[in-house]
Image (cartoon, rainbow, N blue to C red; front, side, top):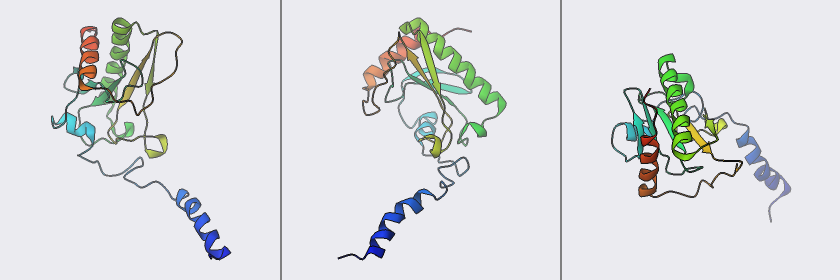
Length: 171
């Protein structure tokens, strides 16, 4: 039988752990992981359903779309972990791509709205430590997002990427 003191220590352990600061690798500062999924896509080591790319940014389909037509905008430069690491020029290029993604979603999908999500640090739900912007289209009043567990097939992602590419603004 455990003593009351031992039980109190077991119950207190998660609280003490929760009060510890985030690991530097998971916070706003830390070492860039060159094996993160976006770095692998940028280097051509992992597949991606590409919507748009230029010298500064890539726009691609996430494996799990929160809504049909959801895209991710990422800067090409390796080494940046959060928005704070981007140069003004990189941030500008990302925002221009975000705006064009919203326009492509309107033209290709009839989007009546879109949401932009950008998380920095694990405490803000950043899971991949390479800056990225989610552009999620909405059609009509439906605000329900798909569960993250629902992965799309590569064929579905490629088909949606083709629809958005065809509607991508020229300027």
